[in-house]
Length: 425
Image 1 (tube, rainbow, N blue to C red):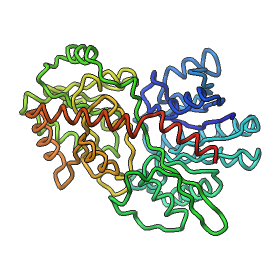
Image 2 (image 1 turned 30 degrees about the horizontal axis):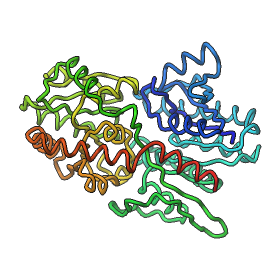
Image 3 (image 1 turned 30 degrees about the vertical axis):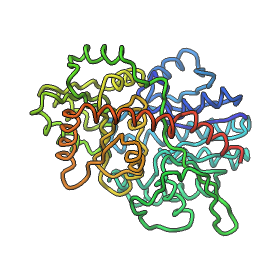
Image 4 (image 1 turned 135 degrees about the vertical axis):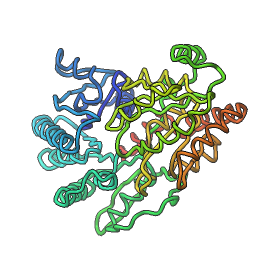
């Protein structure tokens, strides 16, 4: 099958973005498919450099076409909108010129603008597409308070309805997202209550609305077991490089440091643990709140590593002890499928969340994580970290549970197999 994948945020392990598309696409290629990706270089400078030298870049059998559209995690809302529109126009032109060459298009959102070239391919070339909902736009942007203009909201909801209506299938990254999409297909606008998703609800769901049947499936973010697997040598080297003793508890926060990541909770727990010499912090990432976190590195026992490639971040995970995941406390972020969680369990790191999550049933079943919600999540997180620092036996058991969960439920191979099965109808 000849596949065109539209994903503005595509990244390889040389970049600092999520590698979901890269990992799935290279497995498709290994299975005999041909995969072309259209992206920008905002999350992977290496791709942009290679494209300037060679044009199309081939990596792991994937042919990657790179738009010169700029994108960065510190962009303002207006700058992001301009970036989305610029890349959408580039994708529209690419699909108009080359869409007839492909058997299937996969359009990954966010941003939601990726639906437009997919719709163009369907209209002009009868090109079927799978709409992949990595981020439920526009809901998440509205919930985070960044999409406030009523006209833009109306346009966004219109694009979303069209994207769902004409898709061959819809893929989401969490069971909560699937519930939300199904509610939208059925014309329901109610907020989905938390904790209603079922642990094993990854099966393909067929939804009939009028004369139309829709296929919706959860294919969550998943684990790169080989890249992140525990390695005693790497662990010792990373801890020595960053001046950490064997008996200290290293807490890692990685990834985006923006509005939706509830950085205030992260700052609160760092302050609350400053009196404990047992607890050390590694912070890796970038975003609008990155400078607030960087300032904490001056207070001791906090190492701000900045924006790193996926390969570099993997070594930090192998050297750390606990993985911290924070998101806004609004209901929609219950559905979030955070890459950092899956990277963490692949490395055998217990996860601490600052809020409720659809992943909580697995945390409980495998004993590999704790949700610290309530009125003061920062204080609750600090108390839990101190308990773990004082109880190495429990920490060891949680690490074992994390590895089991990664291998049994969330391996990347299983995710790719589910995607291939969905494509076969």
